[in-house]
Image (cartoon, rainbow, N blue to C red; front, side):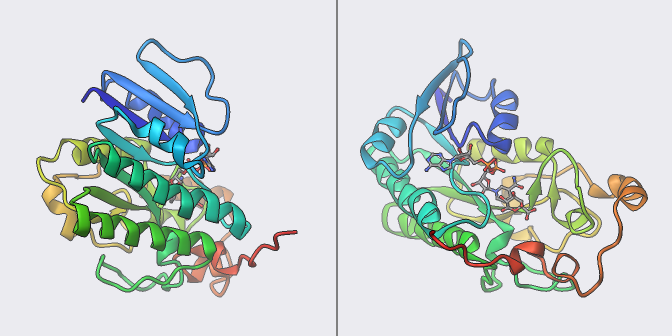
Length: 265
Ligand code: NAI
Ligand code: 15L
């Protein structure tokens, strides 16, 4: 691949993937609204607000693939979610349509289904149950990706990420955790697949207690290797067990199910 665009390159996942994906393309084009530091020899740095359509068109031009991590990543004021996650995504897809339809990996979220209980097992055909405006924005993103596929054959991997971080930090994450290594492998499978289409993929490691069935995406050949279980003993020694009726123990979306609708003021 010649040029891979990573949006949200200054965020937690963006910083982790910047290092790991350095050899995936001749050039990494890194973008965010925050400072991304010095560009390495194979990097281009572009400051760009996803809500700015013209800037997003310039950003996408010349890219062969897009890892779309940029946007608001937790519950927030609707105006911020609207700009980054709704308008921003529309801008990205319109820019992709104008510039050769580079394949997109869209970082969706488990918060599209956050109101399922933790004793329910899901596959990608289960109806969405978003747990806040952030979750709703990811449902919008999934629908937008699907529409661009049906109408224009724009390929997207919709990855409903669980909790992608160094290690699980609470009991819920023993089910939702995805390691950076497994995410890196998934990105490789998505961008190398001869045919992708527009699958929904659960972004989760091979955790003993995972809730999500990825068999519909088995054609990609992604076989996650990590398992959150190896952190259980450490968690049990350091983190108190939550009340079984607390949202973090009851719902797949955990604490997000209890977030308020944030006021604009
Ligand atoms: P993050 O919040 O650390 O990074 C998001 C980045 O997007 C930030 O650097 C931020 O400056 C940038 N951004 C925000 N608004 C923007 C705008 N208007 N224009 C351009 N850039 C903007 O989030 P993280 O954890 O790195 O997640 C990356 C993506 O993956 C997000 O889309 C998030 O919703 C999704 N995701 C992450 C999960 C995780 O466990 N890390 C779980 C589920 C989904
Ligand atoms: C998400 O969607 C968030 O972006 C991330 O910060 C985590 O909170 C994650 O979900 C999670 O549910 O653990």
